[in-house]
Image (tube, rainbow, N blue to C red; front, side, top):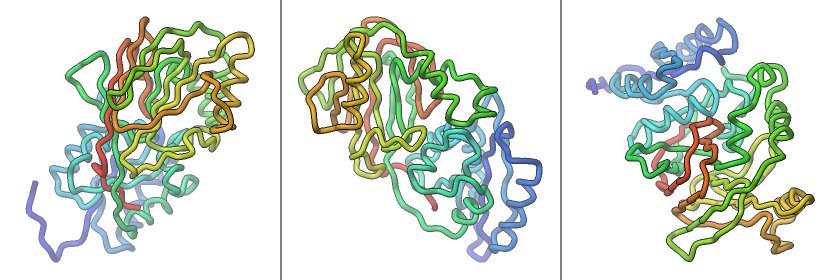
Length: 305
C-alpha cells in the first residue's frame, strides 16, 4: 500500500456496478461532490460479470484510499465487504440496486445516490458484524451482511425475472414467491452453537444478521448488525394450511409454539440437508448444495455513514 502524505486530501474509491448506475451523470456528480467536500477525485472502478467487486476492492486497498464506496445492489456490497472485512479501511454505501437491504437496515439514503455519498464523505465510522459461510464443507469462505437462505427463499432469488425487477422493484420478488409456494419439504438437521440438533422437514432456513427484508418486513425483530449474534428462522409448514402457520409464527412471534416458524439465536450454525436445495447470500443465488455452516465475525467491518 503506498504511503500517504498527511497533508494530501482524502480519497475515496467507488466500486460501481455499471448495470445499476443511475444515469451517465453519476460519475460527474460524485467527482464534483468530492471536490466541494475537499476530497481528491475518486478512484472509479467498474465491476464486470467476471469480477463483481472483489478484484476492484483489492485494487482500492492497494491504492491506499480512505474509504471504499460500494455503488450498486447488495451483491456489490457483499463482494466489497468480503475484501474489506478485517481491515482498517471502511465501507461506504451508495445504493443503486433493487433490494438495498443493508442500506435500508442501516438507514442509508435510498432514493438519492449523491446524498448517500455525501453522508459517506462527512460521516463517522461504526463497526458491524459479518457472517462467514461455507457450502458443502468447501475450503472457500464467503461473507454476508444481511441474510443467508436455504430452500424456498433462495429459490425465489434464483427465479425472479430481471425484467420485472427493472419495472416493479422489490415486488418482482413477491411474484416469484407466489410461483414458488408449491413445493416439497426436505428433511434437515439444524445445529446452533453445537447444541442438540433440531430435525425438521423444512421449506426454508433463513439466517439473519439484520432484521428487515423486502417490503420493510421485519422478519428478525431482535436482530442487530453489531450484537455478535445470528438469528435463525426455520420455516416448516405442514399440511394444506401450513403457510398460514408460518405467517402466524412470524408476525405473532412469542405468542405460539407452532413448529411452522421457529426462531433460534447463536454465534454459529450448521444446516445439513437430505437433498440438495438452493442457497442464497444477501439476495444472490449462489447454487445448490446439502450443507451450510456459518459463524459470526463480530465487529469485523467498518462502515462509514
